[in-house]
Image (cartoon, rainbow, N blue to C red; front, side, top):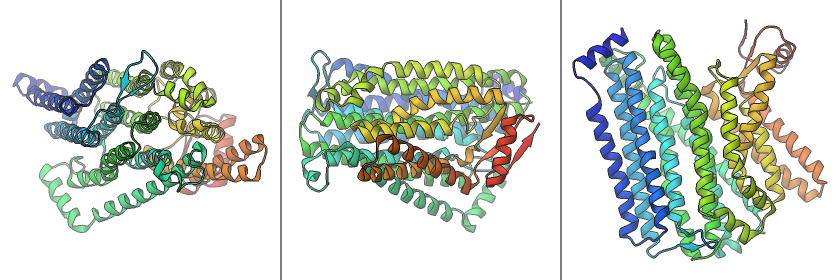
Length: 552
C-alpha cells in the first residue's frame, strides 16, 4: 500500500523538488555569508586553505538536505504527508546551524580585528584560528542535524538519548580546552600551581568538565520535568487527536524535549568561541596559541565523533526496522546495506577529516617544535596510519556484523573503556594527555574488532539498550575522573610505575562496572548453551545486573 501511494503521488506530480531547491538556496546563502565575513573584515590566510576549506564546507552544509530527502521518502511510507514536516524540521535545523556559524564568524572577526596568522614550518604556509573554530562548528552542525534527522523515527513521541550524550560530551570537552587555554596564559599562570604541567592542567580540566556536565544534566532533567506538566499533556493530546496518529513523532512534547536537551550544547558553543578568542587576544601572537587551537580542534572533533557514530547507527537501525515492520520487501536489502555503510564508512571519514586538517595545518609539527613531547612525537608519526586502521577496521566490521542489527556492549563499551584507560595512563606520564579523545577513538576501533571476533566464536551478545547510552557515557566520565584522582594520589605516594598503572586500570574498570551494575543497564542475550553464555548468565544473576534474558 505504501509503495502504491508513492507511485500515485509521483504520477500526480506531488514531489519535494521545490522544497529541496529552497533548502539548497539556504545552504549556499549560509556558505557565501561565511565566506564574505572574513574577507571583508581583512582576515588573511592561505588562498589554497581558504578554497579547500570552503569547498568542504559546501559539502557539509549540503549533506543534511540530501539526508532530509531520504527522511522524507522513508517517513512517507509510514505517515504519508507527515514526511513533509519531518524534512522541514531537518531543513530548519540546518538553517539555524548556518545562522549560528555565521554569527560565530562575525564574533571572531570582531575579536580579531587585525590578521592573526602565524608562520609555521617552512613551506607549510599560514593558518588562522578562524579555520580551527569554524571546523568545530561544522562538526557540531552535522551532529545537531543528525539528531533532527533521527528524531522522526522514534516512537511514542520520545526524543533521542543521543542528544543527552551530546549534552554531556560537549561541555566536558569545551571546559577542558578553556581551562587548558587559560592555564597557558600569563594572567592565570600565577593562580595555578604547576600551571605549565599538562598533567595537572588536564586533570583539573577533566574534573571541572565532569562537574559542569553534571550541572548541565541536572538542568536538562529539570527542563524535561517542567515540560511534563498536565497542561502540556493536554496540548499533546489535542495535537495527536488532530493528526489522528497517537504516536506521531512531531508532537509538541517531542519538540520541547528536543530543544531542552540540546539547549546546553547550543548555548555553550558560542560561549566557547568568545572565551577562547578572548584568551588568544589577551595573549597576543605567541607561538603557543596554535598549540591551543590544535587542542581545540582535536578535542572537539573527537568529542563529536563518538555521538556522531551512534547517531548514524540509530538512524540506520530505525530505518532498517521500519522497512522490516511494514514489509517493504524490495527495500529491506537496500536498508541493510545503508545500515552497514552509515555505521562504518561515514564515521571513519569524519575522523579522517579531523586528522587531515590537523596535519595539513601543521599543528602537530608546531607541537613538536615548541614542546618536544615524546608522546606527541610518537603520535605525529602514527597519525597517518590511524585513518587507514580505522577504515580497515570498519571494512572488517562489515564482514563480522553483516547479519547483526545492533551493537553489543562487549564490542562497544568495554573497548572504549580500555582505550580510555590506556590513553589516561599515557597522558599521566607525558603532556600528550590532551589527545585522550581522538586517540581513544582510534584504539577503541581496533580493540572493538578483536573483542567482536572473540564473542562471535562464543555466540554471546551482551547488549546495552540504546536508550541508556547517555547514562553509560556519564558513568564513563565519572570513572575517568576517579582514575585521574587515583593517578595523582599514587604519584604523591611515589609508587612504581607498574603499580600505578595496575591500580589505575583496576579502579577505572571497577568504578565503571559498579555504576553500570547499580543502574541495572545491562541486557544479556545467551544464544544456545555455550560455556561463556552460562558463565555470563550466572554472573549476571549473582550480581543482579541482568533485567532481561533470552535463550534461543
